[in-house]
Length: 296
Picture 1 (tube, rainbow, N blue to C red):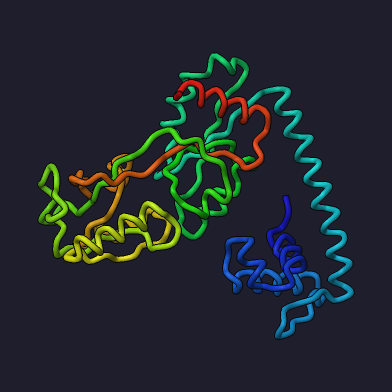
Picture 2: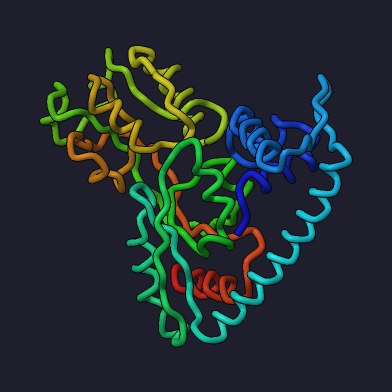
């Protein structure tokens, strides 16, 4: 409901730092500074005193900050009242869906339990699998959408949402259709010797870190190339445009038409589940409990 520049202004004031505000907003410090500069130009006011230790509000900035906070609180209450009115008229579960986290698995669950939710409707909310913005999307669970079903062993994801585990997906590999391995129906780990295997960088997934260490220790003939912690289409594009091998999942076999996904004779897999807010509403909690009984 607000100009993003005003939101950035409040975050900077609260944090006392462009860098800290950028971390909370999931954008770059440069982008935050540009927004503040633009806001000051628009108001024709100096809102912050910049120092080497951070920033602090000017007297004019303090006035704007106080009124902005009032507007935010008033807006939040207005939105809550509007959502309450909407829920009274139509009860809706909003389901996040993207290329790598499609809503299909959620719909499978829905048709198993929808008899317990006769007055509810389903509304799909698309979002982008952008590795730079995905954390902001996950943080929107409970705000932008109520659920999404996704692969999740990410520490940073699980700090931002709850997950009801639904199962596991096998880890596989993808190669371009011109790759020497593309015509094979299955691989041994030794088939990857001499190849460059693309997989997520260390530090965010315990399972991927375990796999990486196992490969390095027992199969040093495989060269490992780091990808961002979260895949997006750019990662699949790089695999398609190079002769590299991409660590992928059985559920992502149709993501990129120029790639072939091949099973490997190993036991690596990763959990997927129903993701929802850390502070779920009563109806979201009821849905999770109902699904849990069904899958048990």
